[in-house]
Length: 226
Image 1 (cartoon, rainbow, N blue to C red):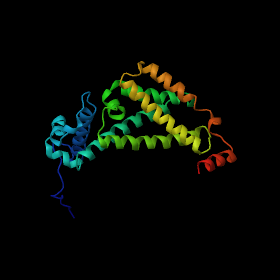
Image 2: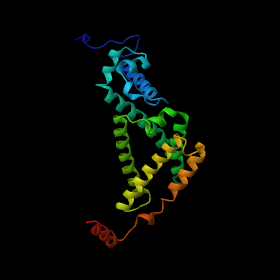
Image 3: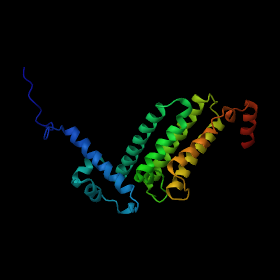
Image 4: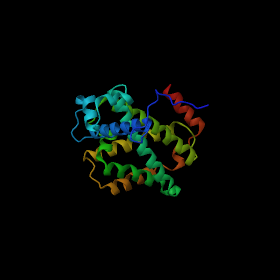
């Protein structure tokens, strides 16, 4: 029995399947979003579907293939950039011995931002006050706090307690604020100098004794807050 092709299924165009064409258009839109959101002179209030598609070189109708609205688009751009940075950072960390991993991870982040200012502005610039970006930054930092705390528990064999949680917030918030200040020119260090300094500071927090406290002392502290 011969199965007839489904006439309703999208056909390849110039040898490219419909799904691949859609993925390609989505990538072009995301790249255009990084150009617009990471621009040195930002006016996100002027962000329009027509302007996004114009930057991507696509007809406006293609926007809605991938995004319901502009907020979903901005969120998609942010997630795409974070995922790419996370993947390259994980690869950099995995490629070196354990004692070099803190510096390797920090080096990848700082050098990526130094090599593409758009990424730094999107992830860290205080001048970019778009409400979706602000929310996505908070979400990504909450995730990083969790991962940082888990790293301390797994690698340093530290107990999962409030001291670990406090240190995780300190690390994530401190690094983010320092990079933001560096991008703004308030911290005038070269990329390698910044990497060295941040890595040295973070190494000071790898002492497991910082996170160990007796159950009695921990309980007394909790009781005093109550």
